[in-house]
Amino acid sequence: MNDNFYPSVTWGVPVSDSNIPQLSSIRRDQSFTTWLVAINQATAETLVLQTIRWRMQLHIEVDPDRPLGQRATLKEPVAQEQPHVLVKNESIPPNAMVKPNANDAQVLMWRPKSGDPIVVIPPKY
Image 1 (cartoon, rainbow, N blue to C red):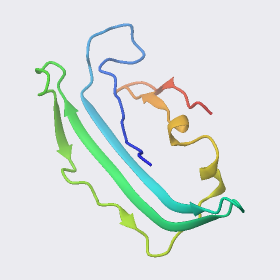
Image 2 (spheres, rainbow, N blue to C red; image 1 turned 135 degrees about the horizontal axis):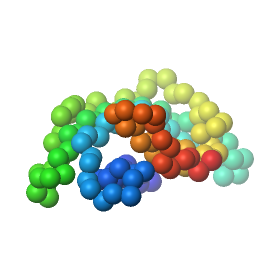
Image 3 (cartoon, rainbow, N blue to C red; image 1 turned 120 degrees about the vertical axis):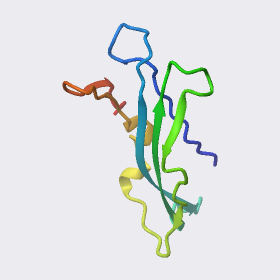
Image 4 (cartoon, one colour; image 1 turned 180 degrees about the vertical axis):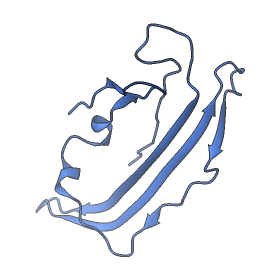
């Protein structure tokens, strides 16, 4: 399995008709749990072999007026926490086996410095 984290971010205000880039920073803080499993094809029984947890935190400052390749600066953390293989496996919750998956449940919100947040892209489910 190859599951790559590949986020994208808009340069402009997603709820505006303007094309002027106004992105100033990106902050993300996400936690993940992944299970390595074996599935008995005859019985459909799922056996958890390993449970792995990790967290991805990110703060990037952006200056869209700078030249390409110099617009973004990683502020923190410089080094990410390493994934943790849990000593005791956790069972897979039933809702992790059906939709919505993480990608279908994501929401894009615009949170202006003043005013109420706006849902730009709602979850698929």
